[in-house]
Length: 510
Image 1 (cartoon, rainbow, N blue to C red):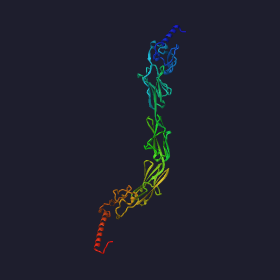
Image 2: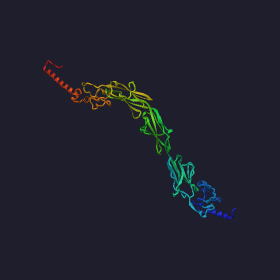
Image 3: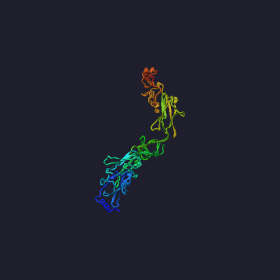
Image 4: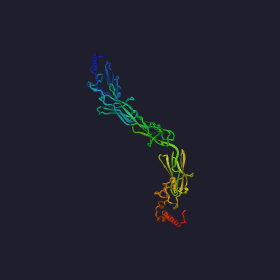
């Protein structure tokens, strides 16, 4: 039982606590600024006298060892070992306080902390480092905490990292007038995306949010995507491409050589969008590499190259099935093949053995465009009568075999001068052969098959304009002079006959 004088003192304290206007200020004892090992916790409650109070205690989670209030927010808080301080709603201490607190320090008035800037929303690619800033003024003895809202996880409190995530750290700029607290996240992961809350542990906790958006560049999943494919001509194919990333990537298809994509006979496009590319009744023209390109606005864009091979049996194209060549010249016969897989190509004479390179034959094969085309050529050197006959070009691959026949005949030029000068409409022209051989034409020194010849034409015969001395030197006669003399003799003979008929009435011409 307290003496009456103590009841009077208590009543005065209660009246002092309830008197005056209520402000948004709290009178804090000096001891809360460092005398106790723990941080300050603040909670609302009721004093035994019935006065609405705010209890200031020590929060061990916020400042180190010690006892006292716990948590950020309201509720009764147990006093520390040095005694808790009860503050009325008008900011006047009504009970508690350390015994060694000087009375001159009990009336220090401070403003409540306030946020000075909003937390900026940040977008960052995965793998980068990021920091979020929370600027506060008048923090005093209050504490700043960072939390991941979606994960309901406390990350940091004051200078301490609470989470066990080694990628999280906290710093603050003491020289900043607003005293900014930075939350650092290194090597950002996709799961770090979400709202981050900065909180001050005032009586009614003050909070603000910032959003961290983590974007992820596209990545093509090879295990879920198509690889190189081989298909028979005329079949249907379906190519798949699966990619992950944030935002979700867009898939586009293009041909590696930039040619168009034939979805079907009636639908041909430059590019195709979608996870799947389907081609109906594929042909050899559709053979080649296709690119699956994944993009979502986050660099880099990635692609996957899928090679499509279309198999079909060999086909042959023979430009000239009947070829004539003059004796002593080189002649080339040719075939064009198409096949996939690449065919085995060779030449035979009739049903004889395969023809190989030799002093008589030259075999060539040139890969065309597209690569399933091949140009086959066989050059026969210094043709003679023994080279007449049938030649075959043969193409084989695992899908089939085919051959083509070319007939070669050898021609012989005239050897007598009495046959006259041949025009370009010689009998060789019937077979589509160039008629520059032997008689006339500025190109008479070339083979008629665009091949080098083994013989050089006599310029007397080739040009038809050598002088008489040259003709005699070569052991021949100038045909122009002979014809001229023949015409003169014929005219003289005719005049003689006419004169004889006119002078003798017994002669008459039939």
